[in-house]
Length: 378
Image (cartoon, rainbow, N blue to C red; front, side, top):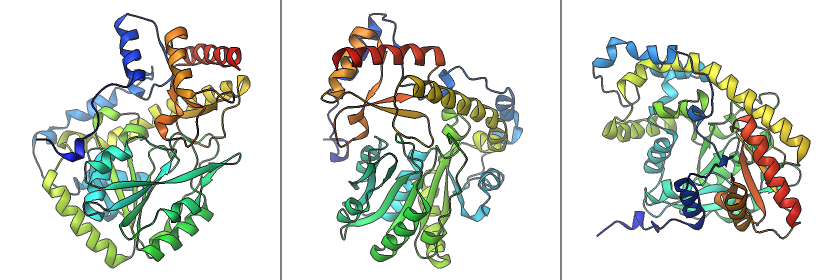
């Protein structure tokens, strides 16, 4: 009766079952997986709410690319021409639009490993397959181009990047951009760069120049309010498109048809978007201070893997420890919730991922319990 696109098992895994049991029992849990900024103790400006008082929100104006004023606000933020900006309801919807644009059922897109655990779901819902290429760590993270090129087949349509990657926090380098440009031209591939964490560097903000790719291939950059302004509930994202003029024009026409079918971005959010971007800066500053402080403290008591940006830190467990069992024991016996590396498709066992968004007092107490458990086992 049901589509093969949603043929995943609906049974909870052991991790989810244990977490539900602990919460149902009223257990105190130090949650080091927090990814929702609206529940992490940040102060949100009142002006974000008053931005919804605009009476224009009561008039429906269907616009496939999004209302011009909202697109102009995004264009100013990213310093691009407004003609290159399309609004969506979320980064996830942006992926859906691009999979529809670029792929036929059964086609293939390349995604990094380790990375964002939602890619497989988003692709399968569009009847698209995922092939993974590796990120390698030698003190810093980088793209393993050997595995990337090995995964390219005649069915491949696009390369997906998360820049900076989640959870490794690694930016794409200019040298990697140059090599991606060659590969995209050679195989006729588009490039999709998910840049939702771009504004959260731990050092200086890097410059990002996709022009070597865009000279001959399509490039799509994704972002949205969820991370940029700490407002996931507002449901506004965007696609910034680049590439050769004729190819970009054809892609724009086809994207417009897709977006016109859904018209999913709400009118009130679009009218409030400029104000949310403006006042969301104060939220972003709070988040950045929190993540930097937590990472700095973590580095005094442990050895997190090198990260350049984002909301997450990765710890390697002592050799021989199974990350799934370690995480279950940590939750069951110490009341600390972290994510095992296999959630992010790490190629090897023995990693845990911590959210730097966590309130500092919870973060420190949880890390101390984690370190005590790992040292007692090793």
